[in-house]
Image (cartoon, rainbow over all chains, first blue to last red; front, side):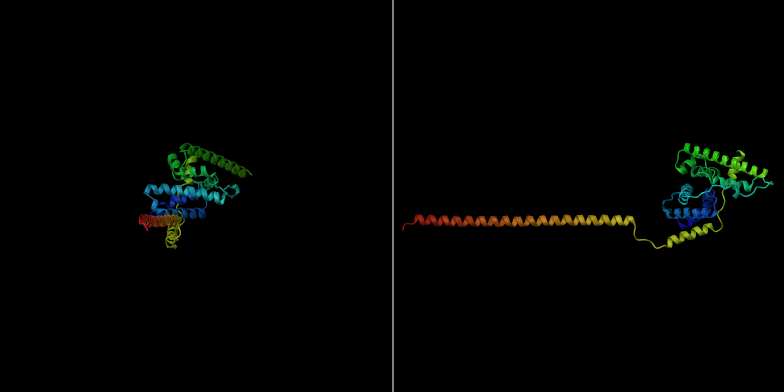
Length: 170
Length: 108
């Protein structure tokens, strides 16, 4: 891989790498730093990169692994404080940016593996087999993390909605 | 797709990084290239250690071989000297025996 190839890869896949990191931490600064580090890791091991499809798989794997490493090292706590969330409005459009922001924060508060699986499934639109290859875990384990993640997310979301309706009654 | 899945998909959809991201990555990559290269590497250290070990073993082996060869040469020289001395002694003994025989045979 030449320097020109590397530049092309960065420009083509920056959205993918950055989005995985951003959805994982819901934090612009951490996502940018992490995404830069992933690309530099690729640059340093560019001689071992074989093909275009290999690059995409490599970037996804490196990004998810690094997200988990950073989470463990820095012991990030993304517990969502309900009063930190922005106020909701009554005139909600069809896609509600506030609701989406809340969902992102709830996703970023999930345990690391269900969080990674959810991000790859819904953010990267990967199927379970692809996720299984990326995370090097059996398909059944991916399914169980996916179901657990969705259940946790729904539980958190319903708790949040209850809290919100209680607030509106007061 | 149920509404929850739809919301989740939209929440986690791809987004572009802050402007200038790619340039910042490329600058850091260039800095990596211009960084002075370290000559030390574990691979080179291991190769050097192996070479030193081979040379040291070879040198010790050669010294042992030379010492033995020298010992063999010295032994051969001693054996030759002993053989020469033995043959000299036999010559002297023969001459003495002949002289004695002459003394016995010649009457006074």
